[in-house]
Amino acid sequence: MHPTVRAAAEWSWRLLIIAAAGFVLLRLFTEFEEVLVPVALAILGSAMLVPVVDALDRRGVPRSLAVLGVIVVALGILAAVLTFVVREFIRGVPELADQVRVTVDRTKQWLVDGPLHVDSEQVRNAGSDVLNVVQNNQDKVTSGALATATTASEIVTGALLTLFLLIFFLYGGGQIWRFLVKGVPSGTRSRVWAAGIAGFGTLVGYVRATVVVALVDAIGIGIGLAILRVPLALPLASLVFLGAFIPIVGALLSGTLAVLVALVTQGWIAAVITLAIVIGVMQLESHVLQPFLLGRSVRLHPVAVVLAIAAGLVSAGIIGGLLAVPLIAFLNTAIRHLSADEDEPSAAIDSTAEVEVGGDKMYAARPDPPMWDEYADGIAVLPDDDDRDT
Image (cartoon, rainbow, N blue to C red; front, side, top):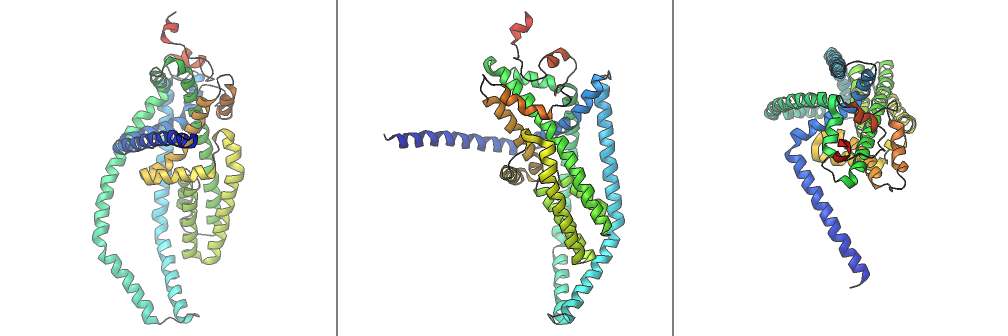
């Protein structure tokens, strides 16, 4: 057999095995999505809050009280922000509706009296057709509302499960990881241990930097909308903040919405200025904030980011798009750590130094703090159970 044919055959069956494994994993995710999504969200939440819990723990606050206090404060902030956004949205909708109505009337007048010279009867018929389409699809809207109610119950259930998991991840995440690592063969246990710590360190850095980037995006675009007197400036800025957690795609969609609102309420000049503000903020995010805050260990190629988000949106909707990039960032660091030469472990370890919180452990857990202090840097060899007994 020709060597080229042999090599092609060897690569083919390996690729088939990888594709089959990926298909099985995708089916498992689809079947257990209601459980796996809360687990992933709880891990992201713990990556955001564990530095604060660890800081309180180091200052002598009992870890259980630290976890409870941090979660209560975080939920309070989230509830306050959502309440404020909903209230401002309710207040701004009437003004937005009035301005949209004025814009529609001006557009109709321009179509009739402008250079197009459209017949007024055609304009009225077009408006009537739009109204008829809305009325004819009223049943679909009602059924969609019922489906939304079902989805809302699923969201509440998932939120409660996420909160439950978050409490235990913050309090004893290290113990959970140690239990999982015990199932790995002893020859590779230390490398898997270190790869997990490095990957979680990357998640901490990613979440922390994403929050800062989202705040800068929301403040910059929100100030611009307020100066232009665009209605719903604060709710739109809040959408920009939430959209920034889905890199590239989220900022693009929320920015487009802001431009459209400016167009229908303030005219095309305000829309062009809003577009310039959105582009400027996105350039600041891409070329200054992300490289400075994320660093080399977390930064991913834009092609990888877009493909990951597209795959996440197709497979799991908005939640998939939200979780895609953190998952890729975690796997990027963990795989590089696992694939590093054993004689040169620093190549993988250095990648986590930039995102290490205060030089302290990522997986602080009580009880059993000596175990996590001893292996906080992710480079020490995890001893076997027999070695600990001696």
